[in-house]
Length: 123
Length: 269
Image 1: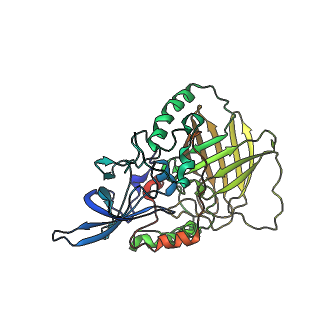
Image 2: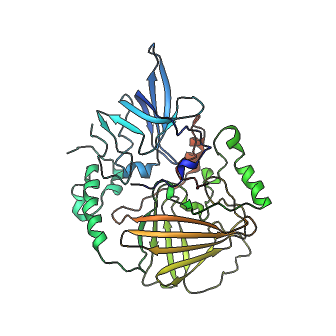
Image 3: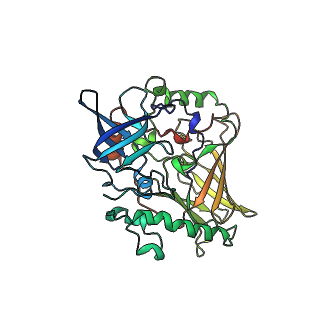
């Protein structure tokens, strides 16, 4: 398990780490690059209008060691995401272990390079 | 059993041992194969003066403050205020020099993403020890022969000039010669050109190494600043390529409301 020294004391982030949002989403792209990977998605509002959003993830090295590749999620994949929302209400957010989740095909995808649990599910 | 196809560009992370090599295309096998080798490793004897190997400080790099951050002197306070001014309005720091691929310096390099640090003690080069940093694909040389800093015309150094010696089984590294523009960590604390950094590497057992850092910067801080990193040996990982590309970094900064400020390892305050 990775150590998470002191993060709880950081009060200046753009993200609200006291909140977690869970939503069903459709992947629009996985941007695989430094410094951090970005997962872009769409959710639907109550009348079915698509709302774009994006999640900041860990850097590609970390994600690769957690078992991901740039093809782990592709446009059109249906996922359920649990993330920390941006404070500005943009709908964007941040993935942070262990509390954040990305569920695909009924399985929570591994987000920890040190985890001994499941790697991303095959497609 | 999973059948996920692994692209060529990440196979290097997954091919972890001769035993696992035939199975390396299935990421879950990585996790399954690490456990028994780690368990065996903990029981193995180790040389406490052998600090070599690939070490991970964990998420964000693992650099954290021990105790309290010392109070800043006026010049450092002014620089800190400028470095963090955006926080008051946008909640993010975009002026972090490393976002533009400026060299991070030390100890900032330990607070810059999750990555391996490899310490290399070559038997045929007893006068030096190398520290390789995966995060921006750079290295430091630790000189072990009590040499003096060569005259470089007074050009300030991002990584400083490092002299090492042994105290018992601990490798102690003194680094000076820093430039005056560096950040200590991602949260905007500055250092001056008077920074004298002392790193003490201590191998606790086969799998764990502690790095204690003491920052003495009498032009910037009223007292020494103590920090530490707890490293875990990652003998089975491959040291990967990870450059900072200005074109990539600048694109990331323009990414809407996202921030490149990783909040996970802010120093304890």
